[in-house]
Amino acid sequence: MRTLHDIPELRARLAEWRGAGLHIALVPTMGNLHEGHVALVEAALARADRVVTTVFVNPLQFGPGEDLDAYPRTLAQDRARLAAAGNHLLFAPSEAAMYPRGRDGHTVVEVPGLSAELCGASRPGHFRGVSTVVAKLFNLVQPDLAVFGQKDYQQLMLIRRMAADLDMAIEILGLPTVREADGLAMSSRNGYLTAAERARAPALYHSLQRLAAAVAAGSEPATAEQDALQALLEAGFEPDYVSVRRREDLARPEAPDRALVVLAAACLGRARLIDNLEFERRGVTRASRQP
Image (cartoon, rainbow, N blue to C red; front, side, top):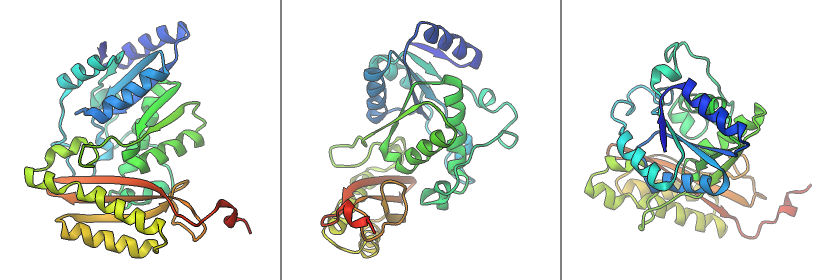
C-alpha cells in the first residue's frame, strides 16, 4: 500500500489506474480508524479494483469550542490497519494542500435544507464543511464508487443529495452501522469515554430500540421522542435531540409514512455520540399515501 500526501502524486497514480481501465472506490475518513472503517474498506475492495482511503481531519466541519485540536490523529496505526485490510492507496493530505487559501478564503459547497436540520441545527456550519471536503475529494479522486457508514445517517443523506444535485457520476454506498457487542455504535470519539461512561454509553442505542418499537406499534412519534429524551437524561446523558424522521428525505413523518428512522445525538462526558435506527411503522401501507 502506498501513502501519498501531495495532490499531484495522487492524480498521477489515479491516471495510471484509469488508463488501465480499473474501477476505483473511495473511502473518506478522518482517521483514528476502527473496525467500522475497516468494514467500509472491505466493502469497497469487494466492489472495485482499487481502493483509495483518505485520512484528513477536516477543520471546516468543526465549530468554535469543538474538539478539532484534541481529535485523535493516529496516522501510523491507521496506515498499518489499512495495509492489513488490503487497501491500495492512503491519501493523507495536509491542511495547506487541501485549503491553500486558508479556511476562510476557500470556496464552499452547501446543501440547503438538510444542512440546517438535526446535527446541523446544533452545529452551524458543520455540514457545509462536510459537503465542501467531500466535494473536493470526489473531484480529486473521481471514483466510480464512494463508501460511507450509516452511523452518520444525516451526512450520508446530504452527500447523496450533493452528488445528485451536482451531477456527480459516483455511486454512493451506505453500509450498516458496526456496533460493539453491547450495541454501542463504533466511533472514533468513543475513546473520550471514561470507564464509567463507557458502561452507560449503550443506553443511547437501547433508547432508540425502545422508541422504534413503540412507534412501530402505534405510539405517536412526539410522545416516544420525549420518553427517549427522559430516559437519556436519567442515564446521565445530555441529549441534543431525539427525532423520528421519514427515511427517504429526513422530513417529519406524516400519518401514512411507513419507512422511518430515529436519529439521536447526546453528550456523555467529553464525547458527543450520535446514532440512528431504521424501522417500519406497522399497519401502514404505501397505498394509503395515495389521495
